[in-house]
Length: 161
Ligand code: SF4
Image (cartoon, rainbow, N blue to C red; front, side, top):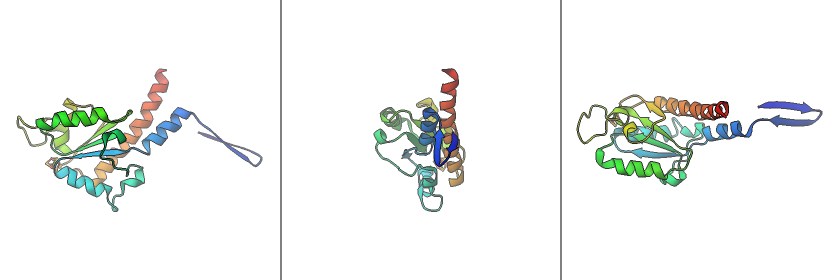
C-alpha cells in the first residue's frame, strides 16, 4: 500500500487482492465446535479478559453458513464425524479450521477405537494449537498464525498466477 500526497489531495494506491486478504484476515467469523474441556477454555478467549474482538474475530456464529473459521475444541468421537463434516461442508468459502488442544489434534490421551485420532483425518486443518487445554494466549497465538496464513495464501496465489 502506498500513500501519495499532491497538494491537499491524499491518495492511497494498493492492490484489491491484498486489501481483501487483509480485510479477511481481520474479520474471521468463528463457528465454535466445542465438545469437552477445551470448549470451556475457549469461552474465556471470547470473554472480556482475553477479548478476541481485538483480532476482529468476535462475531461467533452457530450457523456454518455464516462462518468461515471452524474452531474444533475438544475430543471428537467417531459418532461426531458425520456432523463435523457436514458443518465443514456447509461453511462459506474461503474457510479455515483451527484445531484446539491435544484431543482435537491427535486424540489426546484417548487411545481408543471410538475417538478420532486427529481431526485432520476427516477435514483439513490450517492451524494446530497444542496444550491440554491450551491457554487462552496459545489460542490467540493460533488465531494470529491463521491471520498470517490468510495473508500469505493471497500472496502465493499472486506468485503462481
Ligand atoms: S485436550 Fe485436554 S482439555 Fe482439551 S478436550 Fe482434551 S482432555 Fe480436555
